Amino acid sequence: MTESTVRVRYPAIEPFEHGMLAAGDGNRLYWEACGNPAGKPALVLHGGPGSGCSPGMRRYFDPDAYQIVLFDQRNCGRSQPHASDPSVSLAANTTANLLADIELLREHLGIPRWLIFGWSWGSALALAYAEQHTDRVSEAVLTGLGTGRRAEVELFTRGLGGLFPDAWRRFRDGVPAGYSDGSLAAAYSRLLSHPSQPVREQAARDWCDWEEGMLPTSGHNPRFDDPRFRLAFARIVTHYWSNDHFLRPDGVLLSAASRLGSVPARLIQGTLDLTNLVGTPWLLAAAWPGSELELIDDAGHGGSDRLLSAIVAATNSFARAGGGRG
Image (cartoon, rainbow, N blue to C red; front, top):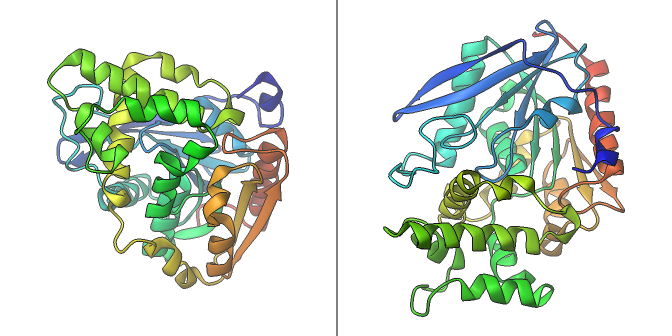
């Protein structure tokens, strides 16, 4: 985020409580709660998969009105074990287990229902959670929309090559001849598990370079300068992308969105967000009766001042609609 985007959110705050939650399979999840302990509960779901939560994610909510809960999903951020260790298995890092982790956290905090906020992969995870636990969701605010479909992965790994040919050529050429069965995500996932450290590190750099190359409006992500973050992020995202996000059948989140009925949702999407090329925002809005789609003209996948202001306006409106922990 640039300095200009910082001003459209609430001021920086610190958690009033945080901890590590045992989630099974040897996983311990970092979580934190910010704002008003008696406020309306809101859950923040970070993107990636594998990006981890950051302090800026606390700032989309009025801290006087909301109890804001964030957590680092399995194997990233401050959760343990960390995917930057190549010996750490990702076998138990699946969408089903992330959904179970969310419920475990909700029960641990004694929260009956909460608003869910998700960006990018976080929007897909929020959608999956809302469909599985509709009675636990009061409202949703989603942006950088994704639904975990194969068409979205194909767009990101191949389809955008025509728009960014030089960056995509470097990305493609990072896979040795004969190393891919056609899925670049799967090929990179194998490279990131290679016994050679230099091979793993180069694959992580090549993957993250393409992440930035296909999202030119987002600017440089300084977290990609950290080798530990790069490897963990690349391992987790390729693990999910090469396994269809562990969602079966393909497109299930869209086809099941009708069960959300009148659950209120704001779908806030930049017109320059390249997932629009496969129709994601319009398909989701059409499938979810209670949703309202708001398009922001100057925003890409990484957001803009106007998009961030729209997120804050949405959370403010839902705060007025009802509060507390009931």
